[in-house]
Length: 74
Length: 388
Image (tube, rainbow over all chains, first blue to last red; front, side):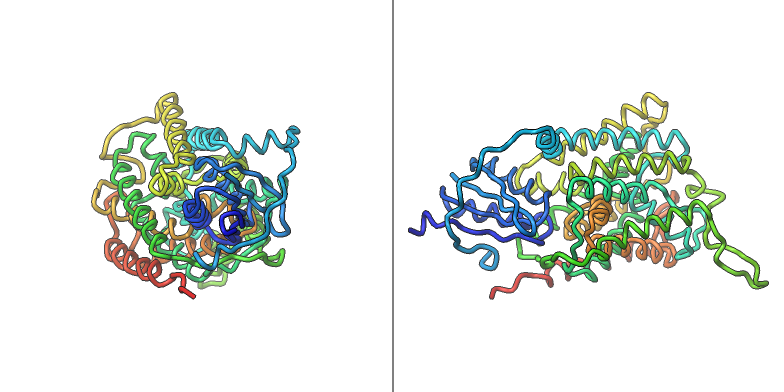
């Protein structure tokens, strides 16, 4: 139910280090599941992906209209 | 962050990644090796620019060079620091080229631009009290200028305080995609600066109506010390390209370690120092000590305090002065506004006796640092997320 619904974290347009802080908080709030992070630049895509991998999440990236969807799962 | 997270539908299974040459190149650029290469190349080329005529330990300094440009166009009249530095032009255009080539040129703005203008002014004032930006502080270390050490300590303190403001909810707001022109202004301004450098037109008129500066070009002092235009421009282009691809940022190098013990960008700082150090040793430019250092002063307190202001201002702005140039090259209009704020801040610094000289802080430099720290604290506490 609530544990399997993915959380969407929208950090588009936020400047460093807000995207990573927000992602870290979202990942810390749950031990596993699916999290989607919406970013608008390659730099934030890379920052968020790196953070997620360090915290043991699997990372996949999809292009989106105005940037990227970083798909995290554990 | 209630406004950032929400529930959504289950994601599709991600497809298998195809590893063509472009994907491999992008993986390199996303790795810490790209950051290391950027740092090492920047440190090395900076030391080479000193050998080729730039001022001592100043192969690249975003702050000093924007100050020199401000002087060249007459925003200030400190005759010893007036020159349109091609390194700045090269970094912005190199970043723009890399961004366009890799599909990352994205005009965007809207994240408290006028506040970023003020952050740029204050960060520049801090840098001119220390006499260096967050790249030059490390180049000075790599040249044996031990006055950089209180500078680095001040930088760490400033970044630490900046991080606390983020934890307290500092949020300048989102930038949004913007019209193409928003992204093109800074690259085009840089091309205009290049034309002014090459042709050095005398656009002023003296009392007799005859052509006079600006454009000014120092005949003495640091503004008169510069490598050949083509070399400086070429170095800037290379650094701009690499730094855009690798997202090189000397604020991130400190900030991310403080925040998360993440050293992805910290290794770039180490590589920059080592690149400069090795090259300086090879070229006989390594002169260890505190006194008699080029374009530097020995006032430990204000070296420290100046860089506290720098660390704080650029942490709140999301990236170091060099990174702001790169972002401006990528089409980020907010970063472009910050760069313009730095230009104006440099003008005020020299007009109002805020800037230091090798003799020490200027008459009102210390007062400006105190005022700057208060103003930035008000910005840090004022621009906070409202709990909806």
